[in-house]
Image (cartoon, rainbow, N blue to C red; front, side):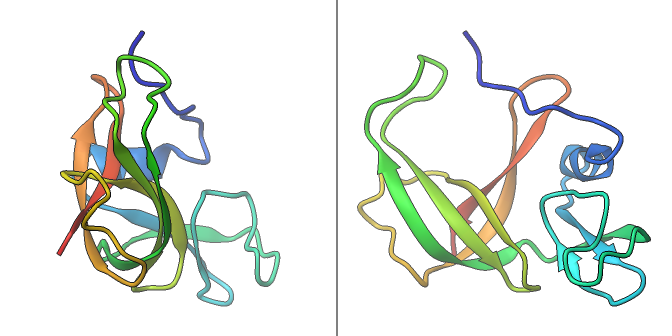
Length: 130
């Protein structure tokens, strides 16, 4: 069994296309300029349905994390770190911290996005410690 593949639909396609290109994108409300991630059909601040996509820096800080010591399948080599990342631009996202067994990770650490191919069609944003 390979890694679990996220669903790609009309709403999320610009996000996944950006990841394929090595660019982290978030939705931006045209009306109030609020940035949000994960992709939605309306703005979580003002409920406008006019949304576009903008590239962000991919820099952030670890808000919380856990170390997974028992992998769900052979496709996921344990231990690995799952973290909530507060992007510098505001949105919070969940991802993994690569190249770490968790012993060097702490809340508040600066991280930067990288991208890993999970299949021919899915490239996943992951983070490394700055």
